[in-house]
Image (tube, rainbow, N blue to C red; front, side):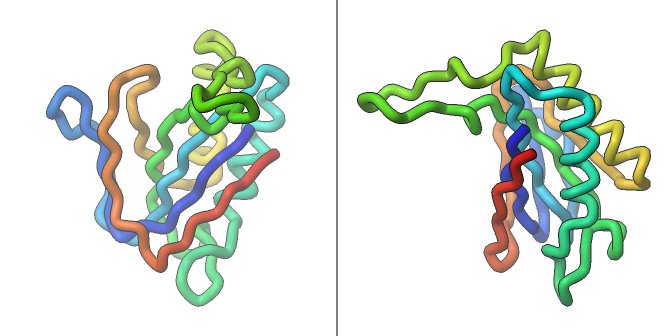
Length: 141
């Protein structure tokens, strides 16, 4: 599993001009990609890593400050760009594999006490955020 984690002062997700999720800061926006070999154990380890990641102000974690998280599934994180100009999506897991693992990731965060909002899997989403810092990390399990 692969995630792009951004500290944000605010974030939102819209689908069909409807606000479906978001927070007013500070919090984390987590874009999550799943590949074919990922497991529930990987989802749990990624949740633990991100929840404890010391990326917030004063080297504190989201856990330390009870920061909200906005989790959005992002299959494009597994784009292959080695040939030509057109990305290949073959490394991204198909929906029957990725959707349950993203949900496992979200549930693992919630079990740790996180307040998590999510995008809508497979929807055409407009994700907005105000990146704070900017602080953006790539986390891979």
